[in-house]
Picture 1 (cartoon, protein in one colour):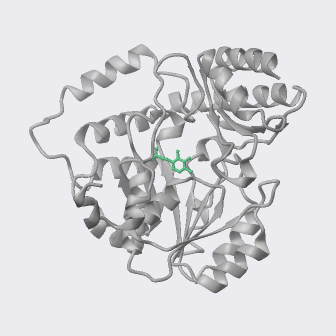
Picture 2 (tube, rainbow, N blue to C red):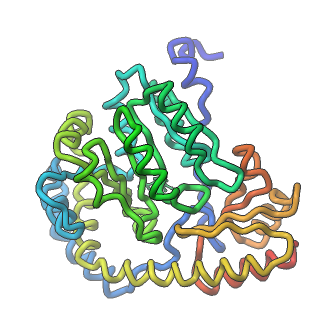
Length: 356
Ligand SMILES: *Cc1c(COP(=O)(O)O)cnc(C)c1O
C-alpha cells in the first residue's frame, strides 16, 4: 500500500476510473458516435479557417462569438444564457461543484448515465436514486416519495435516458419539475434524435437547466457541451468554471460547425432512418426483446445468460457494441448497440443472426 493513499478520501480510493473502450478498427457501435465523417471539401475549408488562429494567444475565456452564434442557432431569448463546457461532462462537474455545499444532494433514476454518480462521488455530493420499472418507465410515486424525503438540491434526468433509449413521459417530467425543491437538470444529449425538449419550458420553470452536447450529433472528438438556463443560474455556474476551459480550436470548429449545421442535420436524419430499419430487423429476430429508441442507439435483451457470449463473439468479428449485463439488476442480459451506417448495421445483423 502506498503511503500517499492514506491522504486520499476513502470514496475516491473505492472509485473505478471511467475506462473508455477505444477500438479504432472494425465496426464501432459501442459509443453512440455518428458513423458519418465530414465531406472532404468541408474539412479543407475548416483547415483554412483554423490556419488563421493565433495559438500563441489565450482563447477568449468567455467564448463570446461562439455563444452568440449558438444563441442564434437555438433562438434563445435574452433572459436565458449559456454555459459552455469541455463536453457536457464538464458542465455536469461544474454544476455539481456549485451545489456541492448543499447537504441535500442529487436525485436521479437508475439505470442511467453513470457519470452522474461518479461526478457526484468525486465532488462529495450525496447521491440518491430510485430504480425504473422493469419496462424502463419511471415509477412516479416512488420518485416523488424519495424527493420529498431527501429534498435534493439537484434532480438530474437523461432525456432520452442513456442506456434505456427513450424519453420519460412529459407529464412525469412536469410532475418532478413541480415537486423539485431545487434545480432540475434535463440532460438532452440525444435531442438531435428525439426532437423532444423542455428548452421551451425554461420560461415557466426558472429552476430548470437544459444540458446539450455536440458529441452525439457528430462531433464527439471535439468535446463541447453546454447548459442553457436563466442567466442568474448561469452566472453562478460561471464562478466555478475554470477561465479557459474551451480552447481556441474547439471554439473555432464549433462556430464552423454551427455555420454548416445542415450537414449534421442531414446525417442525423439518416441515422434516425437507419435506426428504424435496424429496430424492425432486430424485432424480427427470434428470442430478442427490443425496446423502441428515441436516441441513436438501441437496447435489446438476449435469451437468458447469453449476452456476454454474444457480445464477445461480435467482438471476434470486429463488431464492437456495449454489454450492459452486470451493470444494473434491470439490465440483465441487455446489450446496447449504436446505430451505424446501413452497411455496418447490415453486417451487425448478419453476424448476430448466426449467434442466436
Ligand atoms: C454521451 C452522454 C453525455 C456526454 O456528453 P459529452 O458532451 O460527450 O461529455 C452526457 N449525457 C448523456 C446522457 C450521455 O449519454
